[in-house]
Length: 357
Image 1 (tube, rainbow, N blue to C red):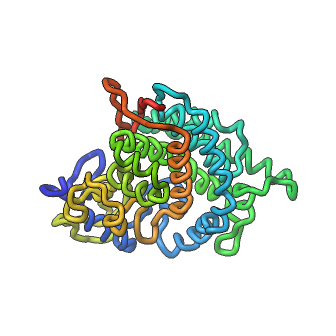
Image 2 (image 1 turned 45 degrees about the vertical axis):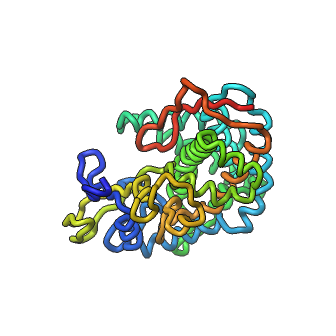
Image 3 (image 1 turned 30 degrees about the horizontal axis):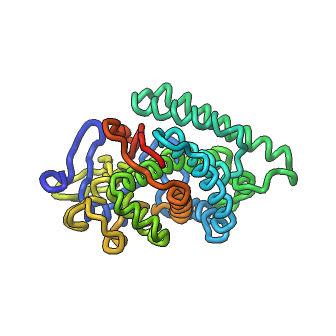
């Protein structure tokens, strides 16, 4: 598609944009390509400037180096504990390891109680199933269920007053935009973004990295010998195999993209998984070149909507990969038991059998 039809139309995804250059141009032109694509409140992902800037200021404040440094030891402990207890022999890595890590680390970062882990795991599975079936009634009911979890936590913290847990969820209750406190709906939207998006994406990332290391034993051996190579290696692995497939925009005025004349109101799907494998930018997209490709890697996006949690995600992925390598002798594929790819909109794997020694 990149070579023969770089901007293509379908009923499912509207106008899909496949080339790296076109995706970058769209990301850096929020005036022409709006992020206000949903009828539901989405803070700040579904907002445009200048409103976006005010909410993004709040979100960015929770991903400062100081915040992340405080969380780093907790993240390392979670990763080490899970890696130490990972069974030897055949393992289904997604359910037994990747999803559990995503749940535990995100709950720890937000300050959510341990008893919420399994309800959240169940909720994510139900949400994924409803999304795959495009069942809007079920999706609305599942969203309402999630909102209920958050509202309960907000009520508990308001009731506790000064005795409320000193966590991000409590802190959001006192944050202000445009001179007023955030509303409950705005807080719920922020926390939903960090949960719905981050849990699935983080689990996908862990699975993709583990599979790549099993598929490339020479790279696995190199990283075991030199763990300092992990940060750049992880970004490059996730460029090669995308955890996030696409993102949406809507056109605000007539514009030409990839030779296509688009009209105001046309909807776009930016296909990250394609843009990050564009041969005109990366050469052979499967060739592992972390240093050479870093500057063009769109793993965490670009422009005003670049992922605010990128430093946190990088920290978490480094710790979990490092602990996986430190606490095992070898991670390998199982002949005759191939991994099962996740179905759009998810990336990565739904089932990942690996052999651990």
